[in-house]
Length: 70
Image (cartoon, rainbow, N blue to C red; front, side):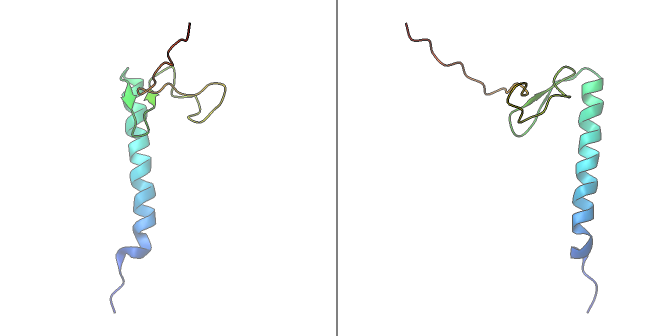
């Protein structure tokens, strides 16, 4: 029975994720703004903010203001 690639799949996924993070960091360093798949806006000022922080979360592109009630 030949050895399947299932053993090394987790390594390849980690490697691809690391490459994607390097690419995002490069784009941000060049002044680009990145919208990730979770709706976060990543740029030079927000890249170091925690995504799920209560006090200082990253801004989201799908943010909607709540209407004021007078």
